[in-house]
Amino acid sequence: MRRSATAIRAYRGPAILSYGFRPFFLRGAIAAALVPVVTLAALAGFIPLQDALSNLRHELIFGYVSAAVAGFLLTAVPNWTGRLPIAGNGLSSPAALWLAGRIAFAASEFVIPVWRAVFSPQLAARGVIAAVTATPGFLDKTALAATILAMLIWSVAPVSMVAAVAALVAAMLTLTRMYAWKGWRTLAEPLVAILHVGYLWLPTSLFLIGASVLVPSLIPTTASLHALTAGLFGVMTLAVMTRATRGHAGRTLSADRSMAAIFVLANLGAVVRVGAGLSKDYAQFLLFAAAIFWGGAFLLFCLVYGRYLVTPRVVSN
Image (cartoon, rainbow, N blue to C red; front, side):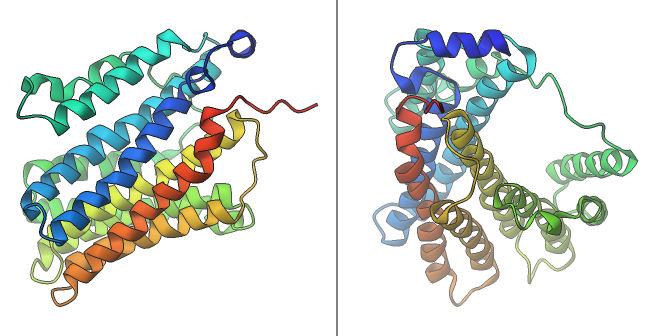
């Protein structure tokens, strides 16, 4: 870890290329903020709705989530292992590959299709999670195994009764696991509490998976998908990105009003997006509202945390 800190202090190039989280968190947040624009354009009739949904699915995973994961791994792995972080030209290369993937997708009819996936292999090869800070107990292992099994069954047989039962069992085990964490005790520390709130979207999505099989006329499959993506992925990655940015940029690890607004908007956007799938009469209005809320969370992140990501770390006396 000392070697890692020494290398960071010795770097003299652009601040945004001084650490892995900087370019990827900023670009990923920009991509996430732009994704709802596609929804609004579709609702306004500028592009076909089906094309918009396809673009949203693609860019949420391959644009935003990939950038958030890459930024996290390129920052956490050097800290965990004591290895030197990549910076400067070494960091600009994977960042450029991610950007090339976004450009290639936007102009997909003009480029070779294989370039659509250019962002991924190079980033994934740069690091794996090498350490954990706590030893999982029996309940943790059982809940995780049940969740993985439920997701595998759901991906193979999404409308089967086996998938419904597996998802509901996994949801109950995950909720039991979360109860054991006593997350309500963290309410005084928003930076920790939001991790519990974000993780709560996992059992919510599992419950909706089971419900969509048992009562498909009331609960569409899309409800579980949006709980998983807009809810779990969106809120958890924002929670990690805000905390990591403040910590590594030399800012105090405390929540302010802007951070609270980011978390509220992200969760509200996810709730409304799930609700849009459950409502037939107000679906279009709810889609519009969800895009505003969820996109607004990432836009606010860019406005508030963007300056931390592009300026040098604050060094305390």
